[in-house]
Length: 184
Image (cartoon, rainbow, N blue to C red; front, side, top):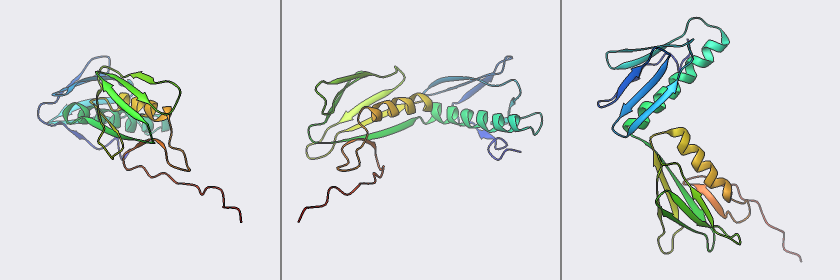
């Protein structure tokens, strides 16, 4: 059996799971509601507070789908009960970030400001303290939407390898290159 797929998902209090006849998994919790269409090859069942996934046989395709849908369901359960959070740092002289509702206004050293509208599910806040780098904190119950938004923001100004200027995830290590050698 798949090591991931065979592990049951425990359902915390306040999380409700529905499985429809056409294999659509709906997870509802205090932070929101998420749905996922599951392949008809994978069977789901809820037994004594745990969500179980089973597959018909051990073909390569069934093994892959087994682990995939179990992982997606685990992320859905965690998202509606605890939520997901990403923190990004904006590093560079004159780089600024400000959130107004779900729109990020960024000044990243280009000749123009960048306005990025985020999905309505994402809650964003920016912190700019004097003497520290501005940070962007995003929270959401859907891990996929949050990851796509964070990747899009990072792609607007990736960290460069010489000075490290750009947008990076908090705690991300950037390998720096040596600059030009001084002429003698």
